Image (cartoon, rainbow, N blue to C red; front, side, top):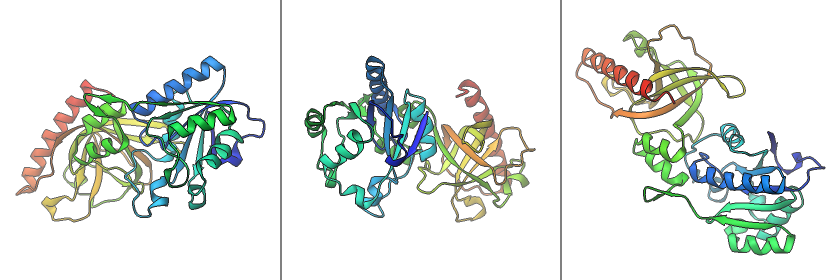
Length: 318
């Protein structure tokens, strides 16, 4: 799969392609349906599929300070897009200047002059151009002008709820990682670097990997979760993976105020992960954060959390 950062990296000889456009945060099931349609058209026309996405999030450029929580970082997003039939990912640097392109300029600059779009697939809520002036109807008209076909797909609805990145963020904010996983089509992942914490988990017999998360990461609500801890290689691929009990919160039993995201790889006290790039995948929420009256009571509960985590991850290896 090709990865281009900016239109200048698109090869000069790039021919016609099928293009799908969006932020694609999370690459959730709604996005996956759009990608499948683009891939289907690509097969019909014997053309490659290009996914166009943006970095940083457009909201942060248009309305500074409004950056939403990120469901997956750019590298992970590109990796996921490649798994759904995309031949190339083009990440467009979203700048204030870029945001001021009118809809016709956007189409001509991105879709026509560089990607030579023969067909364009977007969600029905797709907006483009300065002040989001362009919609699917305008995209179809511009397609007639510039000789490509465009279609806007209805948003995907499951169990009576529209699947969207914002809805998944709300699920995570409520700690409902199971619902988020259902909407994503896989467990929600948080990535970062393993750093040194207070090492209280090691003292209590449960050494944890304390994750310094990436900026704007969508972190589930405080609580204890079952899931997996993964060591990533330099390319972001899975190197090693362990079932884990995961804690998010401020460690109220010890009166600490800093919020942490940490994972205990079940039955492993021999791991040295400091400085390693790692990921935590969330399977299920076990309980909320509690303040215990004694360290012994905390340790007793931690043993129970480990047992439940072991059972859940064994039933659903992910």
